[in-house]
Length: 561
Image (cartoon, rainbow, N blue to C red):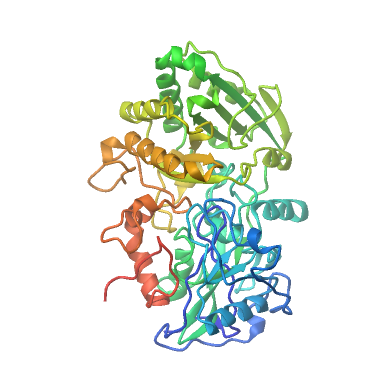
């Protein structure tokens, strides 16, 4: 077989999660059966209009004052003692760093933004490649000579937003936590505040430059959306539109279509809250609130929704110890009237009156007394940043296709009102994000993201700082999740030809090892993340990485021979 590659032995970063951490369990060995083609290096322009830059890598050893910080990511649960951390500033640095790690027999892992939800990057005894200094964002050309926006995998979401907007007046529909790295966010699918209006991040992706290992050598493959259907590079591109990171190779950079949208000039931000003290007096109000919210988005999330595709909303159902349940929204229309109608629909039938939000959890918080505020888009995006402080955390996720069932709402109520002695649950919640609209205009097999008829996306989160509370928080989240999905075996079961489920699996960019790991006899994550697309991902894995050199705890496993 023939691949379009460059034998410059360039390696970059591949993301594992939306949070921007990345990992590649690398090794050298025979890759594809046939040697790759070797076009001239000029065929692979760096977004900065050059080839590999001069090496400027810095090796951080255990006695370096930077070591403790750079050896761990955003989630303080995960730390390790790597042999060293290589700070990467160019493609050439990556080549040197990976070759050296392999020469020393060390397992290299890769970090871009560092927000990995699970322990997929930390690497005791190995080498961590820190890609965060490779963050170029600029207009360039793809391999077919068409204009595109090139994004290096170390760029954060905020780097991307500010550069694309200030230089070119455009944006991508990505996440709101702006310290997340592109390396992980994009290849898992990527979604955010503008996704109901503009689709997923990968719906605008046209090319990915990926390093694979072939015949014992690292090669750069430029996989494009327009490559011949059925070709190996076409499959490789498709796999990076939702297949997650650490599976096929190492992403150097992403290219987005020149047609990516302009953001709205201004948006309305709104934020209200319901005190838990009042909800506990009126338990039916909690049920009505969650049911109303679900029904609204079941009704207003179709692919051709004429009005509310401009609305993004998140309902933060916190533990009662937090003090209040919060509803925040962004409206990209001019007239605030539809937002008032939305809020009225959510509050219909409630005796508990909403108040202006004054505090919450997770930093999706509008710290001013206005019910609505109109702001320039970029300022609003900064206001909605949800990165928050460095803490310990555990996460779960779910796609919902319909309004919530009584069992699901009852599970939420039971666990969010539960008393757990000596455990601080003030930062424990399920965040219910609006979904659908233009996301659902794409068919399930067109990208590797198969969930294309969901209307809500749920993020189960808990944060704490005391390591002694680790087990209590993890156990709480397990019980919470299992109770909500008690009707479908404790997980958000997928819909298929024979089962019309209210749920549709989980999000690969919010990895959760409770859904199994690759070495389990029958892990759940392949079905819950990928549904029917897993078979094609496995075939692509067999083509590009048959020896499973690129792997992590929840990676794609090549099919049995």
